[in-house]
Image (cartoon, rainbow, N blue to C red; front, side, top):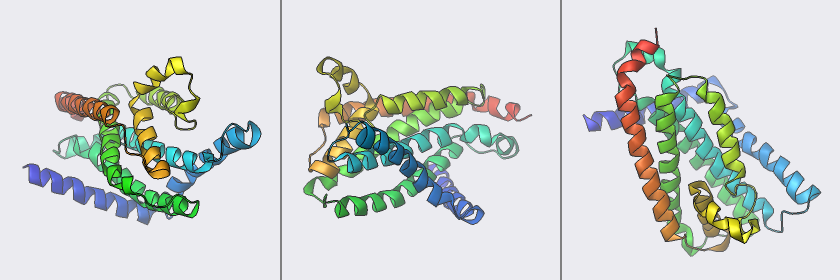
Length: 253
């Protein structure tokens, strides 16, 4: 049964990517342009106008916006997947977890393509491959688990309260500004850094930048805490979806 579930998710992810490519040639291009435009706006404000960016701000911002776009896409697309598939939930007996997993894996495949482009840009800017690259998959697993956990919880709640979508968008915007996506954690006052250390997004962002820009291995203690929190959040999300699954077909009426 588990093998069939995995095969269903993988094949559906492949089919979703093929369908998206067939529907619009701008799908993947827009996924690149959206963070690029935001990065350009932040670079203009913080580096050109306010002159607070610093010499490494462009690669710093590139990494932050690329990773954040992946996380945000997994959370929002995965979080809205069951709600957007309620008619199918009513007609076909499928585990509801299939829908958020397909959305998150599709976004992860897109991220992999964008990350290859990011590496090429970083190498051209003078940040070649280094010995710490082996830790990147570990950091990426922590990021995916954190996004999946949040996405599962949201996917269980949004079908019951669709207006929650508007709250989530605002919360994610606040999280972006409070997670060091557009500014280095060194700029945070000393007495507030312990607060940033409690933010899982800030921890993984700092670890990824340390690997790509400075050949620095992650803070294993902080990353372990993020991984534990993410696994717990995933478990809570799975329980939420399974407990609320009998109610989803009724919501499609």
